[in-house]
Length: 450
Ligand code: GDP
Picture 1 (cartoon, rainbow, N blue to C red):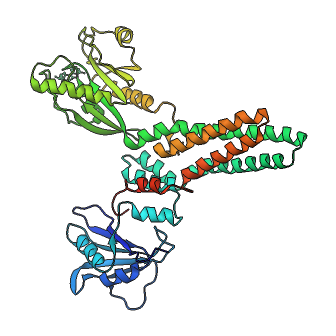
Picture 2 (spheres, rainbow, N blue to C red):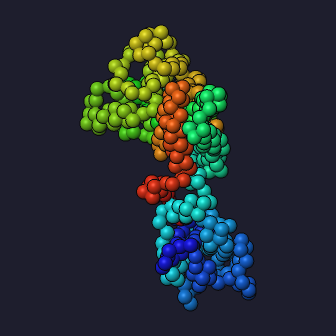
Picture 3 (tube, helix red, strand yellow):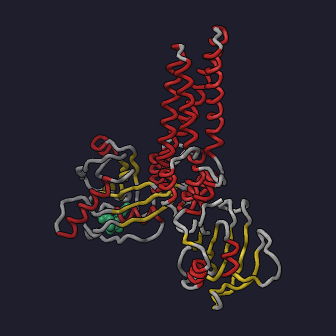
């Protein structure tokens, strides 16, 4: 139940702009009373839950729109409490008018993420599942959406739940031994606990190791194209995108701003930026372009250096803190720059011969970028996402290592304490005993109406 004076919350759940339909959502005790003042169904009789009604949206006596309305009796709703949805026409007028009529009828405007926050507080979702909701909405490729969906449906609990339960069992057995010492049992129990700890550490270690790949899947890999003017950066960008976008000329120094494009590599979102050439700048605009290129490179996950293989020229590389991929471009022209010379001088993580004009080698370049970004990670299988989750998993891991050290020394009390600590960290991961500020920080990143 809500506190005294708590009003139902309302928000537009669909994006603004021209669309067929818009949805306005209401949730909380009293929402049916508020909603029925605005939505007048045509059918007589009381509302049945989960049934869609045809009617009109009204602001007092003023008609707003033809609309549909659904009442969800709690706890069978997204938020776990009484909820109501009004579907009206899209565009900039109807949904705003419906929302304003709801606010006039006793609702208050929902904060970003407040519906999902209520779902969490009412036990409909664990905290990691709630975090996956925004990942799902923000997903940029099918693969990213599939991963978020499986996390939204409890992938992390399926993975770490058994580990968590095992920890409590182990702690309880050790505590029993402290109360009723028995040397024979102790030996067997310590061995059993050590084996259990190894299994738990293995599962946890794999989950932690997969987290960076999952982050890339969510936010996209930043690949920065750089190299001397005229090497074929823009042409290669177009070939990677399989459509024409960047301006290609045979005048050196034409790409002055940073151009960003997105593509999907086997479901991995990639943000490719094409920068100005890295040679010494000749004009002010170009000078700024070169500075932009360096700045862009400092934030890259991968640097993609494009070299013109028909020229015997190797550039001086700026300092790179990410793996380097070299595309030895213009493979159709007589070669004056060998792969060996490039390997020797630049030690790239991958080297691919390309011809941006015919598209030759471009698929191999895509593969090389994917392999370098994802490594051995199995993203389909990964479940641990985001800094908060990784941090708690690492704290649990550290506590398990403490327990593993204490056990062979016969320090059963310390081991039991460490096991309970690890259990506590995993519990916080799922949102048990979560700090209010932590919860607020998670949901304030949500969009309105979710
Ligand atoms: P950027 O300055 O590095 O972006 O280079 P552009 O993509 O604008 O290309 C410069 C010139 O090289 C253009 O005339 C392109 O058509 C040409 N070019 C790019 N890639 C190739 C290639 O693989 N082979 C040949 N022969 N010409 C290319």
